[in-house]
Length: 173
Image (cartoon, helix red, strand yellow):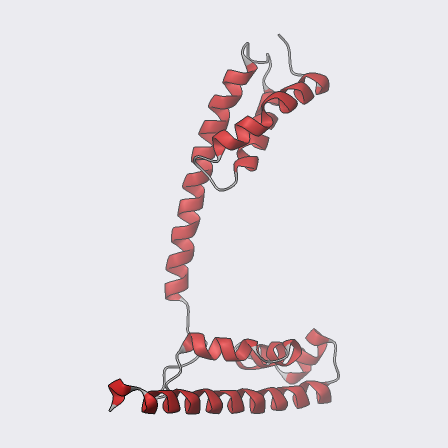
């Protein structure tokens, strides 16, 4: 048998793609990728395998296992990188921790949040930020000041509510 032609490939896909995807799902989170790569490899086979279905199952299995290994490496790398990243907020005596600050930051309007992050953590100038967000520099500065004031107010309210909750708790008495 020579290479697989378009009609034969379509017949193989119609007959086996769904089952192959389910089969690959046992090993990886992207079974469609494993199946697609196996089908591409099938097109490269010259001559085509004698038993196409058996060849596809073997190839899909190997590709799915390789994808699972890559997913595991990527997850491990991302976990390590996440633990090594610099904190956005410096530790302080506040009752807030970093996730609390980040949550409060997300409550700001999108443009104000973008400007504050670019200015404080990105260390961008107001001129650079104005070009980035396509706004006049005066607008950028005004939104930066307003965003900081809103953030400060939210932090104060959050800390006050925590202190109130702690004073009401029977464990704190």
